[in-house]
Image 1 (spheres, one colour):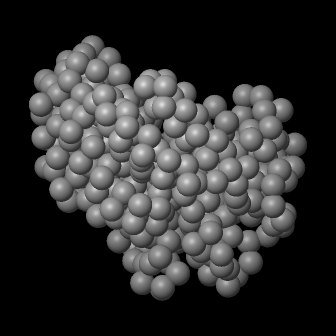
Image 2 (cartoon, helix red, strand yellow):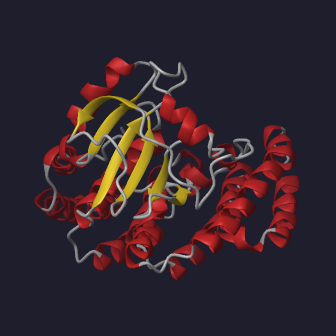
Amino acid sequence: MKKFFLWAMTATMCLVGAVRAELKLGDPAPKLDVGEWVKGEPVTELKEGTIYVVEFWATWCGPCIKAIPHLTELQKANPDVVFLGVNIWEEDESLVKPFVEKMGDKMDYRVVMDNKTTDKHGAMATTWMRAAGRNGIPASFIIDKAGKVAWIGHPMQLDDVLAKVKAGTYDSTSEAKKQASEMAMQQELQTKLMPMMMSEDFDGALKALSELEAKYPDQIEMIERIRISVLLGKGDLPAVYTALDKIAADSKDSGELNEIAWIVLTAPPFEPQRDLDRAAAWATRSCEMTEWKDGEAIDTLARAHAMKGDFEKAVELQTKAVACSTGQLAEELTKNLEAYKAKQVPAIQ
């Protein structure tokens, strides 16, 4: 899964101002005040004894779209958990149904519109997102069996915490402290780092990040990813690759490995120096970790070989990618396969 990894942690995305949160971890979940159901069986209330994942998204949000297949995988792996995709802040609500229909089995969980009849900004956007001090999407809320907010964060970070909530081993007190620290750090990012990024003072930004790292040791992972984006802005690709090497060496997440490989292969900042061998190595590890059953991971590896000019290997790998994929994903990967047969590297959509 080419999950939203690096770009979600770039300075631009992280520098959304945190606001004072009225809805905190451990609080009872707000009621569901939704509009029209787009997909799946409607849910009228959050019932005790059931775990819910309430995920906020929009059709115009690129990171949201990247997270959708991962949410589908989690729903399939956790049929006892109810996943709700709540569409908010939509610029043109007429686009939602066609979008969901086109996604097909890649978006295989309940989907519902926000309710704008009770609040012009959207009832869910107000009583959930704004109340929790969340200004950006995608954002996911885990509601535990007691009907309380157990966790709030990016949907790509759901896996481990959801498993712990289900097992009853999740430490909500520790997470609450961590999220309070994150909110405080984001406020400092907005006031200290934003002006430097806007003026392209990348050296100043790197110094500020080092100071924040000392002040917020529990946010080192996020800070490191922001540092990578600053280094990219500076054009210091050797330092970027060193940082990515460390992330890859420590990673036990196949999706994370696939994502950093994909970014190196496709992201514009890497154009001056795309390390195709590095990307291929990371993609290979991702394929091995998923026992060569993840079509998107194999697709990434096929692209790496095609970019190196080995179209024969790319065709071989892409054929495997198509074989283990279904629905819209299979259609997209088939187009890539045809491109490789024609000895062409497909454009990024």
